Image (cartoon, rainbow, N blue to C red; front, side, top):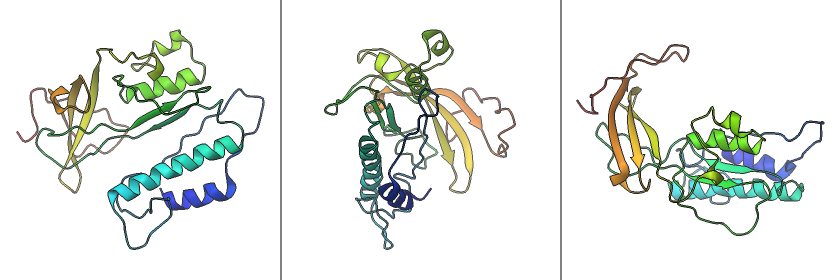
Amino acid sequence: MDDAKYMAELQETGVSATDTGVSGSYRFIHLMGSHPPYTLYRDGTRVAAGTYPEDQSIGALNIVATYLQKLRDAGVYDQTTVIVTADHGEWYYTAEPLTRPVSPIMLVKPAGAHGTLQVSQAPVWAADVQATVLAAAGADEQMLAGYEGVPVWQIPEDAERTRTYYMTTSDWDRDVNVTEYHVEGPADDIASWHLTGRVWDVQGWSDASKNPPTPNVGLLPGE
């Protein structure tokens, strides 16, 4: 939760890999990234006076770049699968239907891949992250068939896929409801985004052990 502190520790200690007799290891690293408060310089160090969203975002990605370099220094980069993503895109407060896309970043380097950055138009979404991790860990097709997502390197650029996005609506104090969208077509085109009519009222639903409430089919934001 403290990106600047993580950057300082990463630069000081680097990364290490120990062979414990188990094939491979897994690391999940959470950064605040582009979230406010904006306290990062572009080099990933802390600033007390505050910066801008662009500086914060570039600073967070510089932390990622530093981690990748530390993997190279440790001699494990080539055999490492790296996934850089986020839990949402440019989320914003609104009780009305979305007026611009909110697609999160999705960067994937499979183990063994190297060279220049390549841009793909493959229609990926959040469910593919889990399948990609499992495939990188050696899961077979039978296991992967039990998951909704697909390893990203198996998705053709011209694939026609319906992806799902759940939009949280907030009154600035607490979550109010969750609205379901389907995305069919380029995710960066708002014309590809469609309300499904499914809305979950989450007021008072804060215990994760409870079952989710029944969706109010046909209820649209603002109604």
